[in-house]
Length: 495
Ligand SMILES: Cc1cc2nc3c(=O)[nH]c(=O)nc-3n(C[C@H](O)[C@H](O)[C@H](O)COP(=O)(O)OP(=O)(O)OC[C@H]3O[C@@H](n4cnc5c(N)ncnc54)[C@H](O)[C@@H]3O)c2cc1C
Image (cartoon, rainbow, N blue to C red; front, side, top):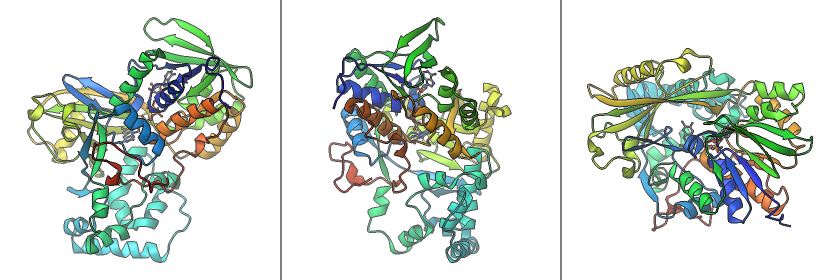
């Protein structure tokens, strides 16, 4: 039975993909909704940034999904404002670039016969002594690829990203992220070919014409046109409760500092899970606070460079697996949607260099000037830049971008979930909000489902099950793009 839409006012905390998908779905069903966002723009980590005449994203934001409700939302909102982008992504290792997903032919040519033999030998060993229950990321990858390929293609990048040895990262992270790819598939494809099928699967993706943030700006425009408020630069500072419901939300206007308190009916939170626990009033029991404090997030520093040169390299982005540089990934926005560049842009290339760190590391506090110098120097070291001039640059620091699956996080999440289920009008969604390593589509699905739970007056959807599905695979099927250039729901999709 549906709830009475008039009495059902929902507060959505955070205007990233998850929060906006909730607000969009509720508004479509004529429910009243207010979105509260601490930043001055919507889109969360998937927002686009406007710099001079460039549109830049927060690193690469390739959109991919097989989830029908997400495809529906994507097409409803973007309509024809989507382009098909050719995908090229490579891994830099040992002074060479390798296509990702790995192609066996290339490995043989680039690494030579001796190294190829080592790779095959260690792969064979991993098949003979197969580890059926890998306990951590290193064991998971070795069980699929063998030790040698693990150290060439995965170890360096992964340790840069997470800042801890691969043996301390939960296997669950790998199984969520490296699916459907195996050495045997790569070898089979290289030797026997794949009738064109697998090749085409990975070479194109759909993307908003004006950057990843366009989807979220369009949702926001729709909400405004339906008189649904999206309060920007407004921070949630406290959530009051009576032990069974969230009763009031306290927010602060970040420009004026003025605080205000509002009664609430339903709450959908996408703000970091540990922050929400801190903001509950009265405070939760000490073991719940301790569990929240044990959750770890990794930060991202983005160094944007406008280089006075056209098409420096053909990739959308490059993984930098080489341990000689701290740089982890480089995005080249010249190879995404042409409308993200100024009309005259062929003479300049916008790059985004990613560095990952914890809040207590020196690099997080490093001056903008030093970070820009570091990025330029490292790009020269790996031959992505030569003597080209960098004519403009800026730095963006993004806290809490990656939930870290280590440190007994599973036990902590169980404690937090058990505690928070007592609040019947609160739903937790999103990447930081539910501490899940979500892509946009997972967050969008969580948002849609949370809204549908309110619309139906029940809890039909289990939000915690999103992004735990091991069958979800990383490759895009071209059949998902129809001749009007939109994503469509293929009949044979099951996940
Ligand atoms: C470098 C990088 C590259 C990525 N690449 C891809 C990719 O290629 N493809 C892909 O699909 N995904 C990618 N992602 C992941 C994608 O960005 C996230 O999945 C998505 O943004 C998660 O959406 P969300 O709404 O769950 O969380 P967020 O985007 O984090 O949004 C949460 C929102 O809540 C707001 N908020 C927080 N605290 C408060 C508060 N107290 N009061 C009010 N508001 C608050 C935040 O400001 C934010 O806007 C990438 C992420 C990063 C960091």
